[in-house]
Length: 298
Ligand code: AMP
Image (tube, rainbow, N blue to C red):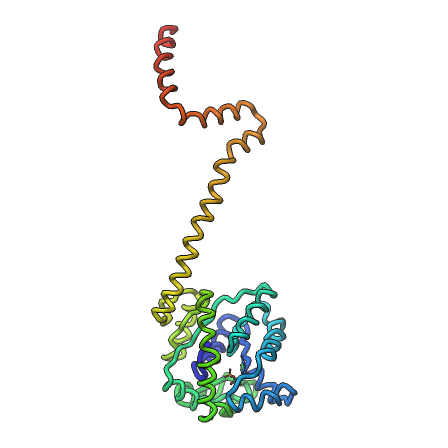
């Protein structure tokens, strides 16, 4: 998750190579529909051009179909989804039905000025779909990573990356998507990554955050406190459960073991063992009186 231009797509593409699971970008799927001229593409066109959001039911249908594809069975990276509270809740239900829990939700954090610079420099290759930035991450020339047979990327600027639309997309993000972050933070899933620096530095932070090394990821004190509180609550619950489990076998074990063996002797010795701590004074006294008699017999 992150504002437009925070680098979600670029980093997701890098993770695809490293993890071998697909990136599911709802923006890319919608753009493909637009290119193919489908009904959905036609409907989404005006919405996207205005920087607004496509309706939640449509987006959930897209995700449901996509995660059912064979290449997504080992896992997937969602990019640009969910963007509203309703999408987040729909996704939770879908993941529960599929028995596929969400491992982590990553927030890419970038300041407003940097966002604008990135969006205005962003270009996409129409052949291989890779995203570049003419200022910070221009494509190599000649290109070695485009589709077969092409030695140069064919770059174009997305319509919705033009200034007027960008402002609206940032506003829509603040209004609809930012509130979803607390939903994931409360669920203990949110990892915040500072998305400023070189591509490789950000990838390192992302991987550290995914591996649970949150020290490498920038995190606000409020979020850390919430996470700590969640961990504390979980820790408090755990010992109680462990104690409850541990207590039962201790009480049952001698009787159960004796019953299983069916040996009166074992039962007797178990009972004797249990009595030992209750009457230490009496046994000690008996030992004292018997000792001289044994001595005298010998
Ligand atoms: P993106 O490439 O992720 O920035 O998405 C481009 C545009 O596609 C957005 O500005 C929206 O109009 C639309 N879009 C992508 N993902 C979603 C989503 N999860 N919910 C609603 N609209 C979306």
